[in-house]
Image 1: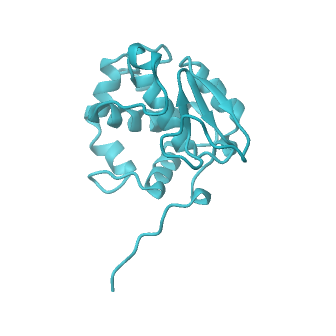
Image 2: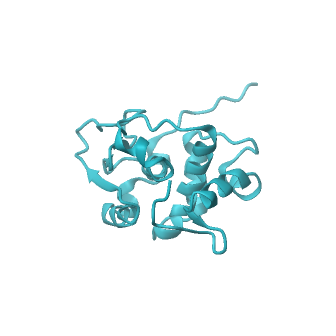
Image 3: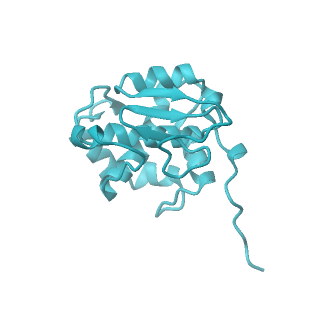
Length: 173
């Protein structure tokens, strides 16, 4: 008997509304990123994946109340990790390297430390539920045992304090 994997469902992950748009706006303002909420009946401008996935246009992250929090933090992480030159022309496709993509995943997990109501474990569960894939089989296993390169990227770019493992607010990329 073969096992089938169900498509991820939006109900299975934490939404932006679950943590509160105000808290998300306060967090991302620390990184010079504005958050623009739009109505549930509107398509999200700047969304690479469509549906409820977060959008990026310039210094603005666009979300609906049903946008998965992992999507909002992932796109925010791209903004934080990219150079100011790329930020200046940012519209929908964040692009980036393999190393940056790993750093973004690490950043979105670390960002949970600054958002009441969601833990790192919650974010890892949501990433797994949505279909992120990692060599060790889960986001948590990757984060705990295989993400030295992502951690190093954030430290080298001044986005993570190596002594405290806390995110730095000042954008340095």
